[in-house]
Image (cartoon, rainbow, N blue to C red):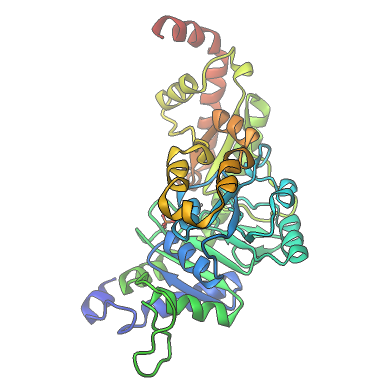
Length: 387
Ligand SMILES: *Cc1c(COP(=O)(O)O)cnc(C)c1O
């Protein structure tokens, strides 16, 4: 960071730090090419441009994700088609993807939510069979794996975030991985205000924006990434311990992983709260009690497909001009996700930083859950009198 500061070269066009990070991240993940971006949202936005997603296109995505996955679809005036969640894994239910495909479908955008993998065997099969590209939103999945290969390298493109909450953190930051040179060059041009890497004259090609990473981010990431492999091992070891302990207690059911997922980044430790195992105690009171025990936790995502702003966007002038009225009318019914609705009422999250500690920390989490389960009846009575 000081080297960058003192060099006075703070823009990737002047310095070497972003380029050095790109080489290192590509090597670390096994991708042929890496392009760094300002953040994960701009990595996704750039990729959607490179894959030629246009107004009138449909994009398949899960409803259990961060809002950015959806926003890049709406920014391109494409139609988001949500496919329901597999409640056992919290991932997009790959078995339901094919039924959601129409002649308008131009992209499959699964998310490796929590850092565990979506069912890539099934999704890649569908992508090949139907000729629809697969973009992995791997913004939570640094160093996650599918059958020994790094997540973000199995689809035609993969996107990452280095925002402050993520497993690899430079405050803000993002990256795109791909094996295709034509795509990485399209991405470069788009994120560099329509100017290709090599150009003559004005050189502008296509639409573009400035979504470049700074040299400070590039320098910080090179230092941060040195710990990533070891930290991934620690998180997985601790998460395996906690899974075992919670399975013994019952009532808080950890998300299962697909057999192909050989590495879980554990950006989130996700579990389902089974109220009936806690004398009917509400999830809200359970989370409050767990926090009172000193365990940071949260309820996780609400159903993204039900956000009122989507309906408002679809009612806007642009969407009304692009899509047939009947198509927009049927959107809500087409994108209903009942399994996800239920899952969102049951979710409990522990954040990745908690898994960088010791196994004693895991025992403390489990002991707190057990304590609440033992006293659930009393808490339930108190819940009634305070409500
Ligand atoms: C964080 C995140 C993003 C967006 O990344 P930013 O760097 O915050 O822009 C996109 N998708 C998912 C699943 C994320 O978790």
